Length: 345
Image (cartoon, rainbow, N blue to C red; front, side, top):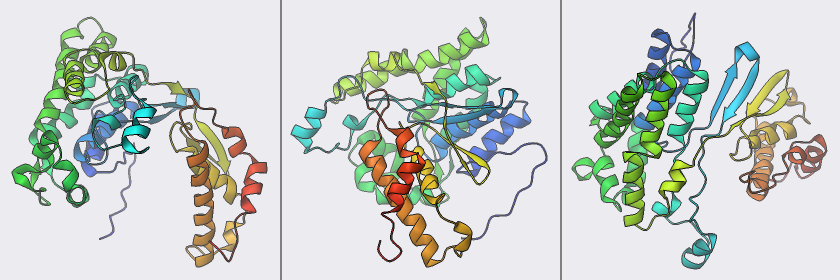
């Protein structure tokens, strides 16, 4: 893969996992929006141009730095299981695994997270920041190799559901690189939220944002989602959608080599990185040649131990007591370091 050129800016910067998402954020800054407006536009666009990996109605953990308050905060953007979800059912009917399909569905969180961030810390309307996403979904974009490779690898899964097959396997096959890829239903859904916002925006910006949110969580889109779950043995209900709200929380913070490193809380795997850093603090990394066998071995072992703790201890802090202070303590890090050997993986 050819190296990408280094880009230098003089006023602001946007970086995203696809250049069209970067463009969406950049255009918002050019139009006078702030960093939060731009971040939402870029993040939302990724749910279009990378809908193989992240969806508009999926998850959207957000981290924001407020310069005027010198404060970092997080917006969870991660929905829990529907209230009807049953561990017993997973154990009895599926051998303890979570099957493909609707029973994997958690409450859609991303739209609420975007609108929460926009209402509290942004300046623009939902329609402003969603305009690029609507355009990419309605008019399409050139299929890229990363997305095509994912569709090819999971073609058998897409073929199990007619609605997915119609979108991701047009003409009965994965789109070729460079083919125009459209998602017309998604475009209509986002446009409906914008239309509802416009209808209420005469009252206030806040009323417009609330209307956009209600369109998804209480209105026609919610009804469509709930009806589909009911007709196909899913768990999601109108109450699950209407009662969802993303939490605004302090981040997890750790210092490393004079830098503050932040992650979201243990409802995600973010603090695993903090654990890795905590373990590696006990070594003089400058004495290791970069990417040498010894360096890669040490970092890999630190990652493995941290991931093992994730599997053992992490979960939703609302329901599980995650001993994060202990996991990130120097005493625990020293205990775990004793398990790292130079000669054995």
